[in-house]
Image (cartoon, rainbow, N blue to C red; front, top):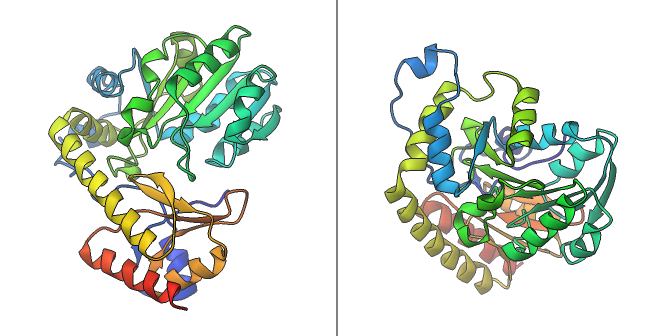
Length: 326
């Protein structure tokens, strides 16, 4: 299995501490407040809730959607819906995409964002993360739609992973996903801070969604996940307030990192930079009880999420200060 953020048990095993601040995932530390759930959410088999689909379509602006058990479920399933294809995956980006396509007989190629336009006409499938995880790079919607049209003309797909797209709604292309050739993945785990629900959505044309639903089988999304997500997707007041607080935190993080000589890119939920000594930096923060994400591949560097409270911000400041003065 690939490496991901989280894994605080591993952090404790390696470094001790019992008061970890987890900045390794890019998940909103102030997640949606989970309400008390009706008993039938727990006791009934989780038949699909049409109200959830309607709420999700309204929130994401999509014509139709399929709820899935986290976008990871769709990432693993989509390669099984096509015959052997020429697949280009943006890199560096969320590594599960390349891993999944590489396991099912497809001819896989990795391409940097600047190379993707040239790869469209020699690929059957192009996969891009927008905004990108971990670098924060973005691609304008008009360019994505052009790629989708060029691929669809040959029966191909453009798969756009918008897991971190809630804070950048102008980048979203889910509204166009009713047309053949465009598949958009969305997640409630990041912005809503509900990663434990394991709930995401796929926007695509009707035949693709039907094939995906058939492959994933019945009861793919739990009853509690559906009930919580329905509340969250309808709560426009919480969404508006959260976007404002995340933008304020983004400015604070930018100033803090800049003050310590770190020039990072990213989104309001995470910050990434090509640290010259990423292993040493990762170990330094770990000794302060701060768990960040270490990248040692093509995205060699560090990714930081948001501290959960004022004490967390202060601990991060102190750790950065001792690092810059080493």
